[in-house]
Length: 256
Image (cartoon, rainbow, N blue to C red; front, side):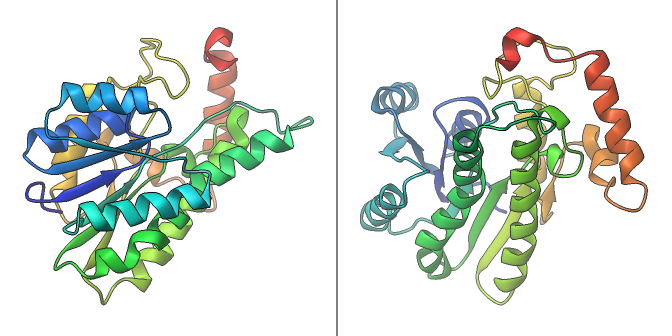
């Protein structure tokens, strides 16, 4: 995608990867519109980045999605980039009882949210000479973390949806790209400084460089082997990865 002269809407962008992407695109002179549920956080981020705009959005609420889409079309008629970034990552235990309400929240946020947001804005995006939808999935779409089974499944499902969405939009002005982050040191779980987590600034720098290409998937170099995992031998990779995580787990205080 081109990194300048865009009007960009980013869901879940008051913290973490979403905010960092918003600020990176803002620094390049794009019109960036951030979204989140809490007005105070929207105000904080926009105040720190003059010229950035904010829209309240509850990505789990179809009515809120439609209201946000209507406001975007009215206030920002040149909107040409949608970044579906909002996501939640509760831990679970697939060997026991899983809280149904939590599972529904994960799937509604991580999977239905991007589907509904794309649907609400798709005709607006098609009307532009060049548009992009970016879906933020995860390395766990390819190698699930067993202690976040529902989250991992939601990201695998979004990856699958992205493949179909890209094909169906092939003859339009809308390109579809996918960002699949590794473990990045953000508040998605809890910022920890764990050496296994990629620093946020390094992740953003590499991701922005790769977004500037025509790559359909934007994957940092450190997770290329994980991206290549699905296939007849994937069980060994998945089991080995999870065994290593059991041996050296994310601290309990972060997984609560």
